[in-house]
Length: 385
Image (cartoon, rainbow, N blue to C red; front, top):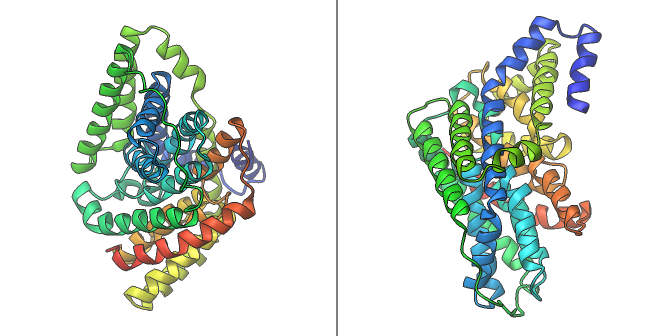
């Protein structure tokens, strides 16, 4: 409502022309296709109980050890984020974890925090692990082998430091053992078909990223094919997915594209371009760190989605080194873990928590986020290329 409303106000005030606004909206076509495809795949997986099945098997495999259960669920979060985006982890894995832990004597809070933090820490494992990656790079999204060469070590550092920080921070809560109960049920036939379809779609995205094919179109086509295959076996699947899709995210992103285009037209983004050029003049280490800290602060103040859009507009029209662009992306993905309003994934995580009867205040989140995110960001800055 606010993003689309802001775009309408800018048009009414003639701060941007209809043609320029439409051009800005079209600029995000790949992002809309990707978001729609990922949302379909995620809702399909939820409908068939894949996330509940994952959480239940982790619970049983840990055999009463909370430390082992935490590690298993953290790895589940890494996999879901890497293959189905960070928003999927926040929105769909979180309630599955909450429901599963609710059947035990274990404190669910450490595991719920893990869902929030891994959603952003794993956001740059693959090019499509976070929609912000598509926003920052646009049509210049690096091929998979180049992406891994630039981000693999930095991503591993972010994940390890985030995991270690959460384990240390919640060490007391993770000490008691729990009763793991009866073994979980196996997936029904429709669930197996859905799992295979989602896995095939994730493989298609990896191949598309490897050959630099449009990942947005790939995600949408793969999702529609998967939905059709599952619907052949279970007729209610398509209706369920259509009913539960969060379509509001499309006009949200489209409105932000228009707002950022208007800011660029007004000359505001020239300040960001000048800042990036100045950061590059400071040298590799100092420049990357300065850019990352500034982007991190802006993301936590204004949310990383508009900051990613502004950064993408600036980077795509400014001659800066790839290393500085990569540092900017790491800050956009990882930096928002400091505040509850830092990223869309975290805000969606808060909504998911409230639906499950949990409340996490901004100060409590900040205490955990600041202690974990700053070391993770610094470690990633040392290893990004």
